[in-house]
Length: 353
Image (cartoon, rainbow, N blue to C red; front, side, top):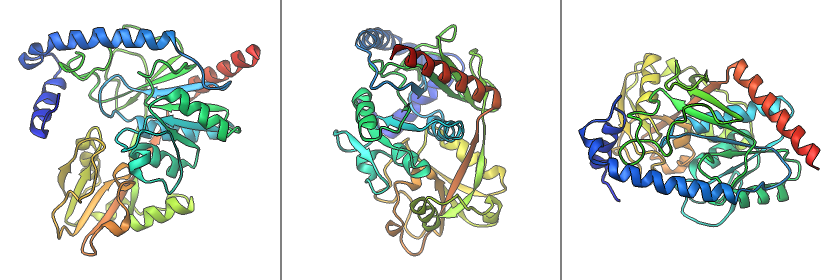
């Protein structure tokens, strides 16, 4: 089913109500059919599930369609895991890319081949990243080329049931599960469980839990701003993110652009730093070619997920583009539970071999 932007916006307005409305009720039969097909596909995937290699597998995903903060979570997890002595590698579908082949992501891989999120993960962390619709094949390719990898992190792999996993992290933002219905009547890819499955942790990308599931709340805040040229130069050099305070942009005429799961949250974060912004929300994973803002726009501020799709040479000389970096801190209790679960998984695998 294809929807134009206005139609999609109206549909999502029904999704994010606290309780199902009349519009959602009309779609319940399709949601029931979706649920039936999804359960059958999940059961078939679990019957065929296999491990790509003799390494633990950590899956990061969410239950809703669209973004809830998986990529910032994955970036924070990678930093935490490396500090704890793990050598992670990442597999991902690479949503929005324009090729079907398995791709080993490098710093110069075009976003059309890598996808925006995998390319951002690789550029920010430097860890090996492989993209493929088949995450098992991606994991095998990852470990074959990078035998030093001792942990596979599957970005957005929750519904890819053919991939055997040891630990999974469910990510929710402040919207929770919306009206609680399955697609297309609501935002859910699968029902919210009444209790946590084994070896599952919940992380809320929000100030407070937004579902009944027990979990920890991450601290998310803007870390600073860089010009687009500065941001790309830091990524190419693998240098620390030297950024100036967001407050440096106060008093400027700014157009805020966001092609993420919840653009409004980005806009509110900018305003919380005293910036006055005009809003330009875009669909999640939106392409930036051609440029989505009017010619002659003096200054633009956007997310790192959008910046990775925008080479500095693509911006006319009359426009300055700022990249707002994001700091995402995992709570200590969550980190301890995660590292403990992964240590147990590594112990189980070592006994099997």
